Each structure stands twice: as C-alpha cells, then as structure tokens.
Length: 101
Image 1 (cartoon, helix red, strand yellow):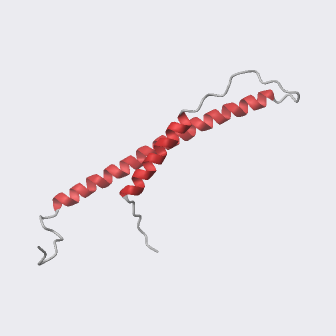
Image 2: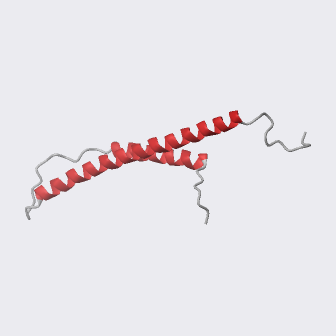
Image 3: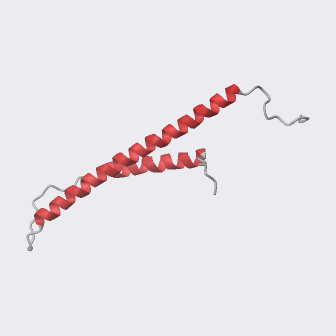
C-alpha cells in the first residue's frame, strides 16, 4: 500500500465546487416558522425546539462546508505555489530527453 496522498487539480476543483453549492444550499434555506404549535398531545413545544435544532444544524453544516471549501482552496494555492517554486529552481531544459528535437 502506498503511503502518499495524491491530490489532483481536477479533484480539488470538483470538491471546491461541490462545497460551494453545499454552502449556498444550506445557508439559503428558509427559517422555520415562528408560530405557536398546538397539538392534541401537547408536543407543540418539543416540535418547535426540534425545528430550532434543525435550523442550527443547517447553519452549522453551511459553516462547515464554507470552512472545508477554504481549506481546499488553500491546498490548491499551496500546490500552485510549490509548482512555481520547483519550476523556478530547475535549470532551463531540465528533464528534456537527450536527442529530442
């Protein structure tokens, strides 16, 4: 088993796009109605608390997706910077095949 992680630009771009959509989806949902919920069994207050919990969870998921998207963007930026530094440190023609036109 190989002990290294390979992150391809295409995969990171796809992850970033999916996280951006998740952030907008979670953050864009409407708030639960703030009405007095009456019921025959007396569980209206419990239902209202549950709906508040759902709203808090939705916001938490949006925050987590946003944070993950920032991390993916940071990984892509670091990879680009590393590629640039490596490219600058190599002499012109490094890796060219001998005898190639």
